[in-house]
Length: 347
Image (tube, rainbow, N blue to C red; front, top):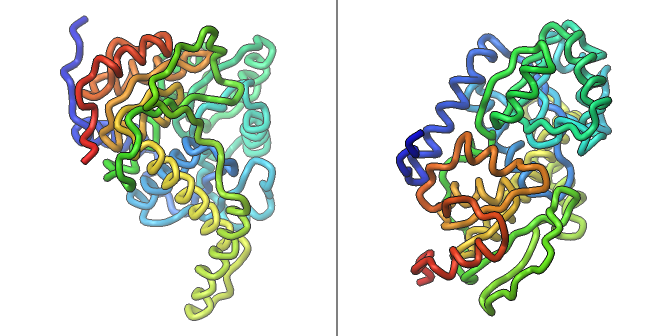
């Protein structure tokens, strides 16, 4: 099969945004109130990028913010039913569909069990089960629901879903692409950033090669102490003007604004981290996506179950500043960096 022609950042982003709308748009026709649930209230930048992309797309498509939002552990059935009497439940996308991140999976299955007649759309996910028993249990619950639609980010997930589940399944790019092309918010101060996972999706890399003096090794999980509390106060202040419009802001109003501020702050942090680097090596999917959004030359490695390579094969392989073929080791990625000429203008 012939290689797809190379594409610049803006062309690829526009193409993927159009594909997202082609896949999701028809299922939102006539929607007014809706819920967007399972907010990622943790420091991982990538999950916040998905949330912010979902918000951006839905605001553009439907002209409004969600009527109800929650984390997996702050869900209230009563509050949801008051806010969204009949509209759909949209479940936040990402890489937690399966048994690797059980709290999010249990929440997903709970929603399907509690609302067998409600339209539920799983925003684009990667599916991974390590246990046959976990997969069977999920299939039993999913296959009893008549209005569940699953969006997946890669062909491997598509194969699992179409084989195991009776729900309709669509292949769809990651929602972070809805953030659009970005200008770097930081000056280029680092020649090489290795942004590598430190959580339980990391690959144990034996014999880590010697790094050049210009290299910086980081993850993107560390954030400002007390950020959540400070942004909650900011959300309170920003929703206060609702009083001038004749209504007292509710706890839900504050929560919707707070989640937006949290996600925006985390995404901005990640953009500064990636944008300040002339060349990036990463095993995080959304660092790769940020490199596309910021037009940064980079090499990618896989996580521990192949999430990145399957995504790249489906969507972002044509990006002209992605080193090919995909690297299988840090040493190989370093060789590509050392062989590259003037990765980015540092002037």
